[in-house]
Length: 256
Image (cartoon, rainbow, N blue to C red; front, side, top):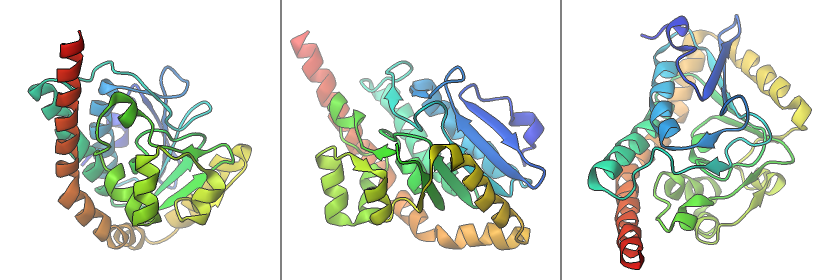
């Protein structure tokens, strides 16, 4: 089992604080500003969610971003999409990070402080999703890099908003505004930016007041279907993504 004191300062791209009632807040960031996702954060977040899930003292988890975005910037630094060993690492981390989110056996709230243009599947695996009017959703980087969106967005968007809508969202790189996302069941509440964290904390403290086993086992009961979806499909989707990355590498070599 993890202890908060042993891991709270271990993650350079996640600022962790915990209230006396056990509400853990996790703010993604790069140098204190909005997160720039890269291969290092891809690896880091696997252990981040594992440590959170292993700490029995966490009663509720709140995920949020920093600056004006939840997650809208990505860098190729630290990624190796184009060699078998490099992509093997991406595939293993990509599967594990999703299961580690589901292995957080307490309710999880996402407070989306702005655009979510990549890894929106993280939010879709949580139990309560709050957004601001400035929040938009899109799956942007996959097609920009020329690769299959196989990291979980392919599984979870059709599950959440329906098969036809979900496939359209991925294939057209649709930009989904906060109100439409709420109407379609992606978002529970749209909250003014200056009230976002206060509302997340209010919901979290209400859940934290439940008996510990009640809140913990309710999260487990509510996520069984999601667990089956990820277990059945994440590896295959990531493998397809890897095949498309190999084709991109071949094309780049031929044109280089």
